[in-house]
Length: 547
Image (cartoon, rainbow, N blue to C red; front, side):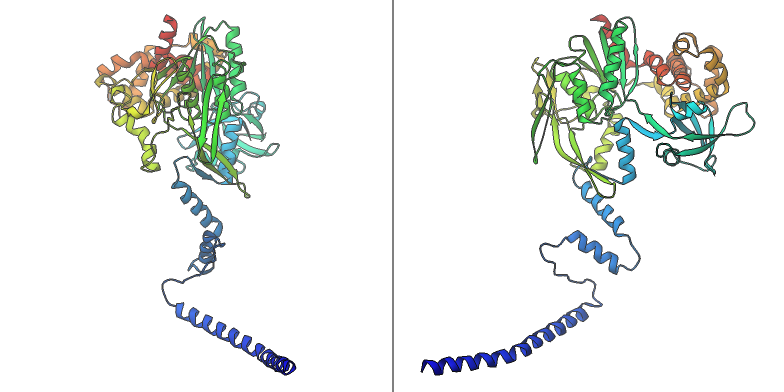
């Protein structure tokens, strides 16, 4: 019986095996038929329905769909860049996507050098004017001068064509050892002069100027925190100390930040060993502390730091560390309020993402990041609202929540959540007597008149004041030159105001002299003169002189 059952089972199995190929064929045909029916049903409808497996990249699928089926031609690369930028905008105001060109320029700025021809320029009246030739750079070696008008780059006309600063930079910058032809017009020379300039590495300095204000007080103006900042600052300290410096003013106004490490190294110059400088923390970044070391060159001498609404990020790290440790005085106006730390992700095509990964905290534990809950536009406009709502003129209008109150080791009350509040607040001057002066400044008339005057007198000025100290001590804005400026402003639509002229005469003369000096000797002449009428600087100098 067992043999008969086994035989029947075998026969039944063979019978099924014969029909299996037929069954598979029927299933396949049915699947194809149903698929065609579904596709046909979907055609002509507004949307197609895609069943995506979990491991699929939704963004990739959407971009691919658009690229394959959109009514017009599109670039998948551009679509992805738009998507990336849109994603980052939903995070915070400081997470950004940079194209390869943008990130290269940004990295050069913070690295402390770039490859180019070595000039500083401005586009004035639709013409590229050389404002300063960087000493030792390729333009200086080939004979380019301040005041030269660049009318041609390569074989292309660049004057009178509405060229932008960005376009000028693109045309002049380039890889080391490459050449570029520059055609210039020069005062008292009838024909254009052609220069073939070999591009080279050009240093970018973060210390704009350092000088002795008097026999004991030094001044250092710092414009950014780049990779070279610690070495530049260290060198400035050494030179000023050799000249007898015992007290120091560090100007961080308008300094929007840069490298976190450079800020830590700078603070280390002033703080004693093991004093906390800053700590950072994020949900995916464990807390990290940065402490001062023994290497500081200015740990015991008096120091004052100047800040304003343009001081941000790394500048605020330094100011916060100095303030919380009771190391020095902070003077000026409330800083910007950026307390976020970014890290860079380099992408395969040379582009990059800078993503906020942590917040930084001052030694007392305060985060000075201002709110960005209403979006990036509102966040950046807060800077301008300070001028509209009167904060820059009346510090009493600034309100901090008690929940953001902190106490330093020295017992001082400080606040987080909106920048560094200075120890001594110096408001902007306001009132009817300053209306005339503000019109002159806002319309750029002082700068424009100074440039035109310098342009006409450049040869005589450069010969007579070849040394910057000779200009600072010897050049005067006489009455004729002053009233020439008043008439120049009047011709430009700013009516004379007897009260305004009387109130602002000395300040106007100081600014005229400073801007003319900048056109000849750059910032080495500008800041020592400009600071003579700058209220924040004068307050710092007064307090240091009395101490």
